[in-house]
Length: 295
Length: 244
Image 1 (cartoon, rainbow over the protein chains, first blue to last red):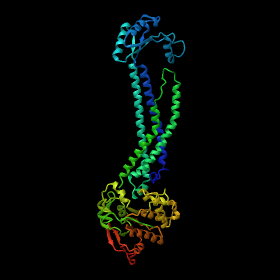
Image 2 (cartoon, rainbow over the protein chains, first blue to last red):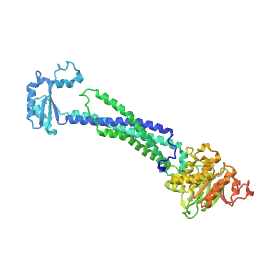
Image 3 (tube, chains in turn yellow, cyan):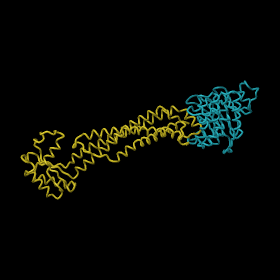
Image 4 (cartoon, each protein chain N blue to C red):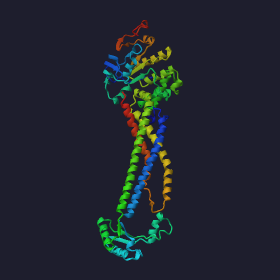
């Protein structure tokens, strides 16, 4: 087993424990970033799927104050919609459902029931072509001037903007974590190089190649980072459970119940291995660079 | 000890220095215009007063330093400006005994001696056989598993010598290799080196021990005032004179 023999006494080296702890924290942070990114992706998918190809038409209260669902403006609009070829279905949202949607903000009391609420018409388009949406909008405006037509694009764009911003923050966090990991390995490796300078000199004198010495440092860094990474995942598991539990307590309507994609679990499992790979490459390059300055 | 080795695979001198100078940083030259050649299978003592630069001259030859100027050749290869990746192969043909031993404290005596063989990826069976045999020869069979720190200076020195010769190097460079052992052990260690010399290794031993130099009839390289002078074997009557 010559390949696994280590001529450098790196096992008991003080910087080793420091690397394990630091990598544990870094992998924990990376796990948060990865989960955030996956959650945002899942939310976007959910929201995008539920609003694409739909319109919400709002008939303001003043157009039809007495009995919104049966009044002329609403019926006129519904009539226009039912006859339009680009519309698959159109139906007024029952007042009870509107009241239900408002409950998270106004509470379950009677206050919502007395509010003068506009009529909402849910429209499912047979196509999501912008020209068809525009044609439907024009027809509705002609039938009921003052009706507000929302194709959700403005809302979706803002949500996408927010999501992309959060995604960029998550990716920045990943980049920072990767940089911090590399720097940790560089400093730990340099400290060990200084500590074992005489041993390294002897190894050189007896004919050891730089790659042989670098390999011993790289193997040590890989094992420490793998151990730290696994520890980071172990402490992240209950954290993820707590976040999921807290999210489940939020009432429906604010946060949809989304499922994490399988790729998230794969990515999380790969994080310790990735930390080990980054550490291996960084330690190897650091040692080779340092040794290249010698005779 | 069965020391079987291949015939030297190069032609010419083992070591050749041409007008070599060495200085540290911007300091003065420790020696200048040093020229000499060490033929294959030769034995030389390197003598000279303390501070003359014997250790520095040896360190040039075991490639721990490069000449500031001039030309250094080992085994027929110009190593003056050789690329680093060429040096390990050349170093594996050398055996070096340091004045301060430089044993690896985290390793046993056995592992210290085995180091050159393991670096050269020699099989463990051969390592086991050769190292055990050599440690017995230098009288350390009882200390094979001991760490250097629990051994006496003389025992450590014997391990250092065993490590330098275990891979049967073509050139043995030793810096005061018998400085910490009594005369009987010193002679025994010298016999080991002489045996390797007879089998074809070139040997350069830097030493202050005039009695040792006078006991073995080998020529000297005398370093003094930054210059090297070739001298014939020392006669016992010369002990205590300036040239030693």
